[in-house]
Length: 457
Image 1 (cartoon, rainbow, N blue to C red):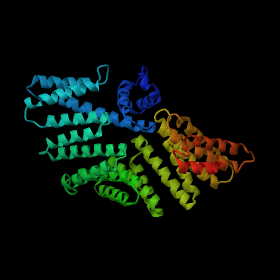
Image 2 (cartoon, one colour):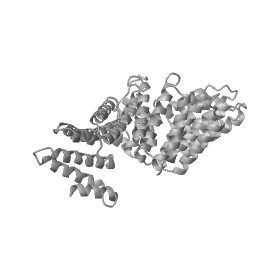
Image 3 (cartoon, rainbow, N blue to C red):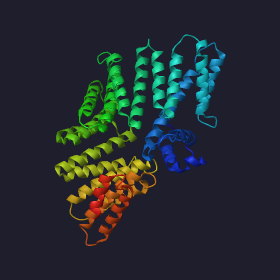
Image 4 (cartoon, rainbow, N blue to C red):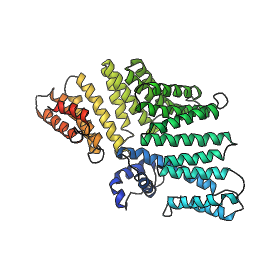
């Protein structure tokens, strides 16, 4: 783990001051310099996002920046007789380093200069492919995914004699298309990514002779199919996603590729859970539960803390669903315990909106459990959990999530009022429902408005 000292995010430009909490949280989580993260955040904010996307986007950008620095460091060691070309590559690497001289604009300028001089260097295609990859990573940082995909296409074209590099760059190209489709809600782009993954699987991998690359491609195909399947009605894409994950698991194992195996199990659990919900399939929910439990055999809190919390959160969700379906208090209690485990990692200071989402989920699990128990205590805990969530799920930051939690709080207070001799819980429930209706208006959310308004009548 990087143990460098992390400075406080002070002296932020005006346009970033409203995001000081997110920057401070990212610093603690990623152990990254505030100045680097501020530059990355500024790029992220140049395109529309919701506030709850920031955590994941900053983490992705930090990974891309580290990869860019590694590639530029390698390029700066290129053996060439062209001293100008060598100097430009060295300056590009220096401009990408953390510190006062860090400037992605300068990096881009140096890379473009290196491109213009490349014809004067040797016929080795490796530096040309690496330059294209560096351009692609810069495009990723700017969330210009279509541009990133084109740069990966260039890298692929100049690496046509190297199957391993072809697979690498084609996979990165498909990943860029997947990011574009996910963020722009463009199903056609997702379909293009899926087609590309299928081509990679057929032409650049082999289950028998190259099982590791084959499995990784199948898992990434499963991810893309899963994203598309969540958006589209029906079950076909989700069924294909499950099939891809299961093919990947044939070549992965917790002994030989533990991290990849656990990631695939987590993806499989998600796809199974979504499909089970659509088909109201109890057996498939149990399969989803098994997949998450398998993933947690590798994803321990000690070795994979963030991933462990992610899977614990997924585990809580499926336990809650099965508990509701079976009317089983013990399963609902296990869901409560799973969410409480998540809070050990998704803390308020390191991931404030993830922390709030977990408290919202915990509140719902406690409410469902409290409805089946005698006495008010569990319902009181549910109300407290929702109120904790609202400490970060504010109307200014995440208005739709704020409204959802206000509505959930109203439901918990209403259930609590039914067990109380006081009318105060009912009054508080009405106030919470009325708050939700400030965002869930008849014009913007007619169905949700009607349901909440009916409860409030």
